[in-house]
Image 1 (tube, one colour):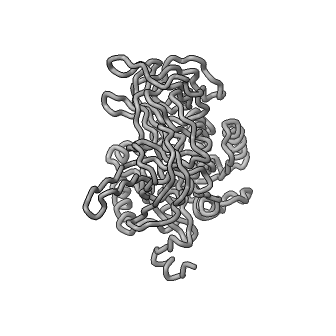
Image 2 (image 1 turned 30 degrees about the horizontal axis):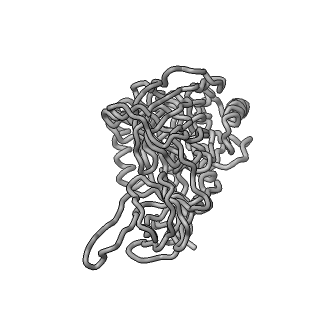
Image 3 (image 1 turned 135 degrees about the vertical axis):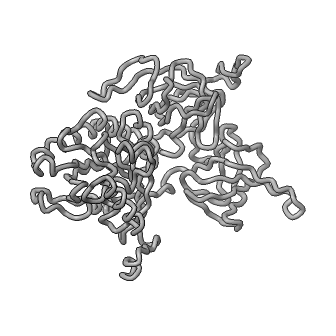
Length: 449
C-alpha cells in the first residue's frame, strides 16, 4: 500500500493504481481548459513554477485570480485568442489512480481533434454551459464518443454559478443529454453539476448545491470501473518488422516483430498468417531478448514460426481457431477530418494496423444528421467533421475485425495518396463477403479494383 510519505512527495506506486485515459470535449467557452486547470490545481498536480508562470501572465492581464485555463492552453495562438486549438495531453496521478488526460478543442472546425483525443479514451467528459444547454456541438461530441465506443461519458454542466445553482436547470439539461446519448448507444452516462471557475464539485463538493448528492468529477474519475483486459479478446499480432540477422551466431534466425494488439499467444499454438491464409505453429516467443512461453497484449515481442512462410510487414498473425475474416469490401462509419471533401470515386490509401493498401471509395450510403440522428441518404460526399457510412474497395484483402469487437483491429485511416493527409478515421462495421475472384484487375495506375 502507498505510504503517506510517498503521497506527500507526489510519488504514486504504479503497482497499486490503475490507469484511466479520458478526454474532455465541449463547445467554445464552455470552460474545458478551466475545468482541466482546476482539476490539476485542486488535486495538487501542478508544479510550483507552472503555477507561478500562470499567476504572472494572469496578473499582466489584470486578472485578480490565476487563469487556470493557461495550464493547458500552451500554444501562443491559444493564449492570445482564449481558445483551445490543439489536443493538449496532461499526465497526473492521485493516491487512487493515474490519469492521461486529453483536452480537446471546442470549435466545430476542430471536432476532428476530438477524434484523436477520444480514440483511446476510457471516458469522455462532455461540458455544457448551463446557460446554453445542449447545442449542436454537444450532440456532435456525444456522437463521436458513441462511434468511438467510449464506455463512460460524464456530462459536466458547467457555470452553475451563473444560473444561481438552480437544480431545475441542471435536471433539464441532464435529461435531454441522457436521452440523446442513450439513443446513440452510449452505455453509461453520469451527470455532474459544476463550476470550474469556482471549483464547485470538481475536486471538492459544492457548498452551493446541497440538492446534489453524487460524486465530484475527481471522485468519479478515481472510482469509475476501467478494464484494460485486452487478453479477453482473440489474439491479433500485426507484423511490424521481419528480423533476419543472418550472422554466424544466428544464421537461420527468422523472427516477426510487433506489438500484440489483443489476446494471448503461446508457444506451440497453431496460427494463421493473413491475408495469405498459410498456417504454422509458434515455435518460440522472444521478449526483451529472452525466450518466453506466453505473451499477451500489449507486449511487444518477436514470434518465431515452425515453417518457412513468406511474411512481411502488414501481415496479421492470428490463432487458427479464431482468425478474422478477410475482405476487399469494407463497410464502415467514418469521421471525416480533412478540409478537402471525400467523394464517391476518390482514390485513397487505407491504413489498418501496420498494413497500407490502395483503395477506392465506392459508395457513401448516408451521412448522419446530428439534430435528430436521422440518416441523410446518398450525400455524394463528406466534408470536414461529417460522420457518415462509406463502402471502400481495397486493392488487397484486409483482415478486419468489427470495431465493436476490437477498437485496435477494427479501426483504420483513409489517407490522401498525393500528400499523406489523413482524410477520415474509420470504424469497421459489417463487411461484404469477399468476392469470388482472387485477382485484381487494375488499370495502368493500379486503382481499378
